[in-house]
Amino acid sequence: MIQLDFYGTLVAASLVLLLGRGLVTRVGFLRAYNIPEPVAGGLLVALVLLILRLLDMEVRFDTSLQTPLMLAFFATIGLSADFASLKKGGRVVGIFLLAVTGLLVVQNAMGIGLATALGLDPLMGLLTGSVTLAGGHGTGAAWGATFSEKYGLASASELAMASATFGLVLGGLIGGPVARLLIKRTQVPGCNGQEKPRMPKGFEQPNKERSITPFSFIETLALIAVSLLAGNLLNGMLRETAFELPTFVCVLFVGVILRNGLSAFGLYQVFEREVSVLGNVSLSLFLAIALMSLKLWDLAALALPIFIILAAQTLVMALFAIFVTFRIMGSNYDAAVLAAGHCGFGLGATPTAIANMQAVTQRYGPSQIAFLVVPMVGAFFIDIVNVIVIKLYLALPFFGAA
Image (cartoon, rainbow, N blue to C red; front, side, top):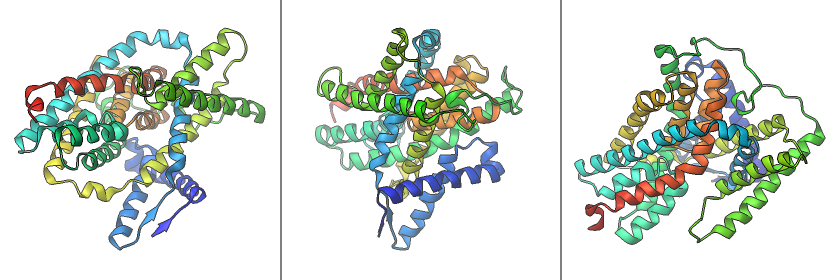
């Protein structure tokens, strides 16, 4: 077994990003279907590691950097959001949240229905629904423990982790093709299917050059560090209370308060170009570490019926994004980008959603509203609404008898 330390893992993640960039640049299929660079490189490395494991060789990474990178990314999302923009996007956020909530209901109905039809415990259907797909690894781990302890579902935690991994992979793979289908075949208003001139708009165009100085870079780094520190303190204060929230939500919230508080008092104006640079670096490295360290052999351990349910969920996600999300959000270019983002966190996580949207906007042009709406819904609302939906399903009679 080869164990890479902190520095070795950082080198590996950097190489994965360079590999992904090279693949997307040279492989027409990946470029045409807007596959994010971290996803392309990370999955290839994960597949290589799977082959090595079959040959009795294993490589393990030090993932201690993964959580700080994710939190730093959400801090930059918060620092990028001003109240004027949030107010402007209020109605769109509400509509998108409605679409997201509809998917949660559909995912659980699909999971429970297929599990019952395949002779499985309905709880397995719920676990392969919004619990792990929209909820991700963290929500899956929490509910997996509950299902084991309260309902006696064997290997619930293992199933949850494998299902969340499946969703993370597929969420990063289907978003780009869905957006391409909508843009190419539907001829959405605002996009003629050709590449547009790129504008340096933060997260929308991550590869654009931005003028920065060492001092302003340090100022922005300090804001991110304050957001991480205060967000973790806030999370500790709210823990085991009725207002408990995931750490990344607290960090994002602190970032929003910092950005708008400093601006309101005339103390400091956040330099968005530095924020976008640091945010994109954090996002890329986080996704590279997450994807290259995927244990794909866990997916191989899933029984055929579970694979059938998850495959059906992936198809449902794509169809929902095309026929519901796209249409309810206006059937235009912004709606196509939002559909790609919905695929990302409908099956995986908010960082995957951002990567999906970046792959689209880098090619076809910016979508400011998409990069405003998706982080807000993915960070602030999805976990809260998901818990409510899951508990409503658990209140059904056949779960009470489980």
